[in-house]
Image (spheres, rainbow, N blue to C red):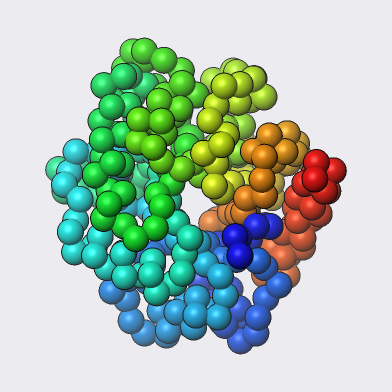
Length: 275
C-alpha cells in the first residue's frame, strides 16, 4: 500500500526505545549514510527497525547540484539498501554539498540561473537510471543568493523538476523560512508550481536569531507552517506521506509522538474534508 500519514525521522536518541517495541507511526525516514558500511549496535538496532517497519530513504551527500563525479561504490551500496529496506523512493536536496572531493557538510544553495537549472536537471537524469526506485528532489533554505538571479526560487525549482522529470519532496518549512528571510508571500509562491510531482512533504520547526530565521529542525512546528500544510495538502490531489523532522534539541520520544499525533489529526481533518 502507498505510504501516507505523518511519520518521524529515526534518530539515535530513540533507537533503543523504538527497537524494543513497535511505535505507532506509519513510517520512519532514515539517511542511508547513517547505516551503509556501519557496524556495531547502532547499525544492528537500525536494521532491525527497518526490517519491521516501513521506511523512506532520504540522503544527504550526493551533492546533486555539484560537479564532482558521483561515487560508484556508494551508489551501488545505496541501490542495495533501497531494495533491502523497501523504500518507495530516494530523495536528496536540490543543492551542492561537496567541492573538489571535499565535503562541506552543508546544504549549499544553487544560483537561480538557467544554466544552473540545466546542470542540476542533467545530474538528476544521470542518477535516476542508477537507482532502483524513483528519485525526489527537496527544496532547501538559503540565506543569500549566489550571484545575479535570472529567475526566482519557485521558477528555478519548477524548471529543474520538469527538466529532470523528477518527483518533489516539498519541504513546507523551508518555503516558510525563505519567505520570512526574503519577504515573499508563501501562499502565492505555490501558484503555478508542479504540485502533481509532490510525492512527500517535510515539516519542521525553525528559530529566529535577530533578523534571520534559521531552519534548525530544533523546535516544534510553528502554527503558520501547519497552516501552510493545511493549504497545500488538498491541492496535491492525493494523500502523500508527511515527515515531522527533528534533528536538534531532540525531545523524549513521548513528546515527539504527541506532536506527531497532533499533526496527524490535521492531516486526517484536511484530507477528510476534501475526500
